[in-house]
Amino acid sequence: MKAITINRPGSQDVLKLSYLPTPSPGIREVLVKVRATAVNPIDWKVRESGCISSEKKLSFPAVLGLDIAGEVVVLGDGAKDFKIGDRVFGYLIWIKWEDMLNILQ
Image (tube, rainbow, N blue to C red; front, side):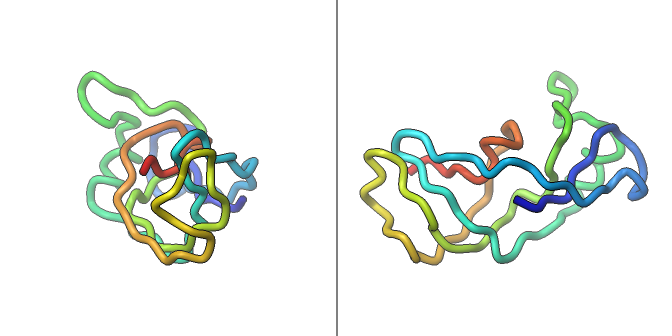
């Protein structure tokens, strides 16, 4: 999958187009093909500092931009509230990039 990542804190110069393995949904999760995302002030603050909070640092590579809209493309076991093709939107929590697109029902 394509993603804009950072490998270290810094200015916008650290943003990089990356190709990451597509994650697989876990139990009660769905995989969403992201069609739109947003970057908010918190994203550039996290990019500059490398920290989510005073207690939690990013793990790299990190994907910023947690507001997403897209469509469900794969259902994990037990994911019964969605169907493939459903259009969804949401705000993702700060998690590892490989889990970024798996949304717990």
